[in-house]
Length: 351
Image 1 (cartoon, one colour):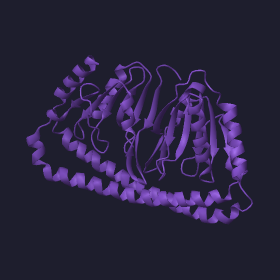
Image 2 (cartoon, rainbow, N blue to C red):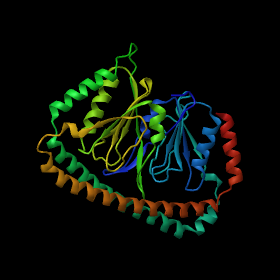
Image 3 (cartoon, rainbow, N blue to C red):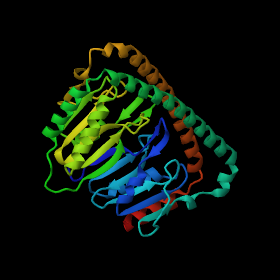
């Protein structure tokens, strides 16, 4: 991976178990700047300006509701992060000054003007919450069906053959390092929107020149492979990116990347098929038992229903995003952007 590479990830997701984020893992850094401000205050723009200023390897952490917006920036060499610390990913300082610094944008708004629009702001906030709650219900139902399908399909797997394959794969690809300094960064590589599952495949190709794609039509096999790869990589002393499945009820691993080996392992399935040139394919059909057809029809029905539920969830998230943008417009019309820009510039020069 190049020294100045920018990687794209998510660190939050609306999952079958509700909204989850992994921002607490940023406590391992040296310093953390917490951006506080209402919708439309320019938090994402603020983060993008910091990123443009810093010429080093970094991570752009995107908003799972709006992939064009940034929730955070992680600077790898500086070991510093700038984070949108407002709901739903609220982050409050524990060691203010020593570790976290709060950067407030609340003071640059005309509160009298906002107060005059209180009813409309309240209506839009409630409407946004309504559509996100509906999306959550559909995602939860889809998660139950996916989990049931996975459990059903795994009954048709030749586990002995699978375990032997995983052992050979890990021994061949993951050699033990001389230095033993393992490290794990937990991220999401994909999110749900109105068009289905959106994935940052460019991040995968930046992290790894050699990629194994597990074609997992039997949901569950890829998870076993990923867990074994994760364990082998950490035991061998490597730093890894562990990317979770946002549609899983159990924090199932979708992808593992080992940048020091330029090696990646990815899950491809009916919800997010992956096409990467020159990738090595692992077809899960090879691990089927003869009784596989007994479960295929029932499992297939559940996955088809889950896919329809996720499409419905995506439509509700799309409406929630549209509502959020209307809310942003109210705050934008009440903002003193000249003062915000001056404040932003003074902050940038202090970094």
